[in-house]
Image (cartoon, rainbow, N blue to C red; front, side, top):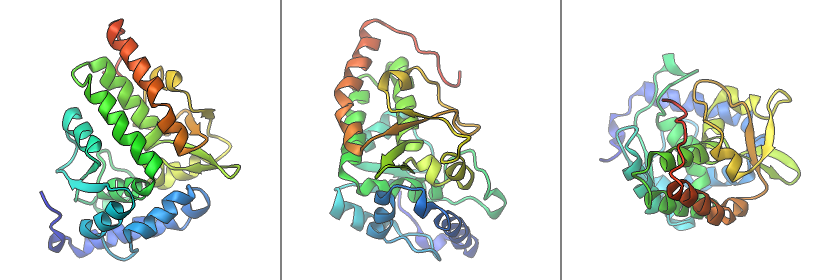
Length: 248
């Protein structure tokens, strides 16, 4: 599949522009500095849908990653295989203006605006690809897939970081959401230290704001937690530990 850029309608470009300007109006003081630098690296513009060729040019030069076009949500095995190969699966379709506030299935704005800037951060990318290698060793085990989904959810999608003494966003699910990107830094939100075992015990939430956000100290911390992740996953496999699915 390819991004058929000529097929984007004026509404598509308007949707990108509306969402982009909304997020960039308030994100700069809430999001990690690496996200803002990543936006420059991949060449996002406010007034038009990004071209994947330009995005990949920036990513390949910085971390060796690229965006791989998929039709929508894909199965676990090909998803983690792409990540292992430094390819981020992303769709090319955009929500309609009537869906600006909420969309159940991730669209291009989530996939590209939310995820791509962080793919310019080497330590984060190494965590993502090597985590995928670990998961792929046990991809047929539903209990491993469940805890991997929880880990991905609470780091890649809804992770937060202490950066220069301030709480910042790095997860794509937050940075691409107008509401949650404001809520997660408010006094209403609960923040807890990054803890692999605790994440494995915590079902993920996809129909409301998160009950708690796991906060890392650095992207190197994520990468350095991989041996523990591997060890905990091997325990699940060896002991045949059953993990109740987040959404049965």
